[in-house]
Length: 358
Image (cartoon, rainbow, N blue to C red; front, side):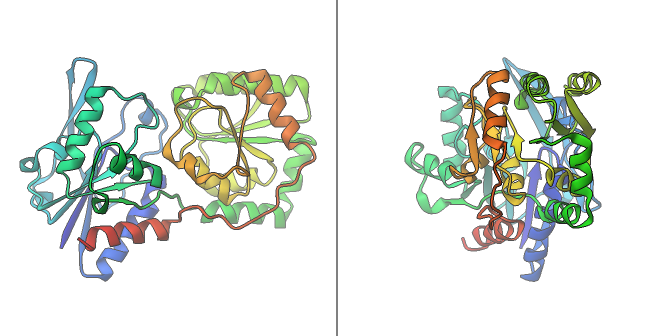
């Protein structure tokens, strides 16, 4: 069987999952191919896209229809007519609407299910219901996304499967453990101060509320000079973070390897994420760090992976956020424990089982 997956673009964090899916399918005698375009806008500024040798180019052009920018994508000839096409659960995705645009025998949609990061319109929800009903199968990241499609949109329960979402947390854990064993953690603490210290990892753009982040970091430094926020990542708001670093409000490391993130995390007490909590939930669980956030309404489905002991909601005010985070972290040691979050292996296995079982 030939299975084709489309993505808007392939970010570095997604490669281990896709390669594991390919391995599992190949072991069962199936062929797995991935086609993707290139990132645009804020996503392009994150500089996290990759183009591994197995990736096929997905020709993408854009058209403006009212308030929407619609991608017009074309599969390369060698990927048309697959047995299965796995494509995004997105109302702007023409592959979800028109089988003749790809010729696959079976269509699987993969996405959030529920609209977590934006307020949906009635038209948008009707369109999502329509494409979900037309699909042979829908995959979601979380049980809440699955439940929404079944209970609110009337999609047949056997045709919706929650498979999870994951990152490769091995390099994070290895980096943290090496830093503790080799004395890197102690060196960081001597350099940064007595702490507690905090970590931000992610795209530097509006979805992560970077202005709020640096304002909170400034409040933290003024109230507790021995504490520091360490920022890792890149994006359109990089200049804002660099200015904060020049003032001494943050330590900015730029885009760094996941092993380096693990090293830095060894000296931190919590992850700061006042904006969207997404896959950082997986990383924070692996690093045994709680996530400190706000009740801002744009969180992604992966926030569901965090239990009450894993997340702290703080006031939606930078100074109060910094004060609350510092107070919650000072003198407290979080016990290390096994994570219950999805893994690369569990998500890949669930993906393959869902595709092959029908």
